[in-house]
Image (cartoon, rainbow, N blue to C red; front, side, top):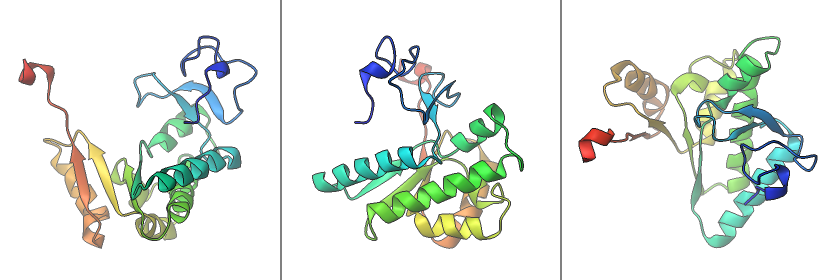
Length: 178
C-alpha cells in the first residue's frame, strides 16, 4: 500500500497536499475516477519503483498477475500538461510502463490492462508500440461496453485479432437492481 496519510492535510488522496507528498503525485484529480483520485506521473522512475515494489509484494503473496487500471490516464495528462507531439509521448510512456510492469511481474504472470483500444491503434504515433503493448499483456479489460458495437469491434481488431482475450465489465444501472 503506497498511500501515506501524511501526504495530505486530511489524510485522503483528494485532500490538500503537504510538503511530504512525493513529486510524482500531481495536484490534478482524475476525471476517470470522478475526481476521487490524483493522477500520478507514471513516467517517473520514482513511481515505477513503487509499482515494482508492489508487484514484488503481490508475487510474495502468491498472486498470479495484475490488473493495471486506467491506462487511459495518458489522455488526461495530454489535456492537463500538453507536450510537443500531443498525446503520443504520453501514450508511448504508458506502453513503456506496461512493458516494465510486465517484465517485473515475470514471464508467467497474467497482466491485464483496463482501457480502450487506442494504445494499440495509433495513439503512440509509432508503428512499433502497438506490437510492444500486445507482447507485454495477457489481455485487456474494458468497462461499460454494453451497446457499444464500434468499441467492441475496435477491441476485437486491436487485441482479440492477435490472440489476446478481451474482457468486459459492465455495471447494472441502479433501477435494474431495485
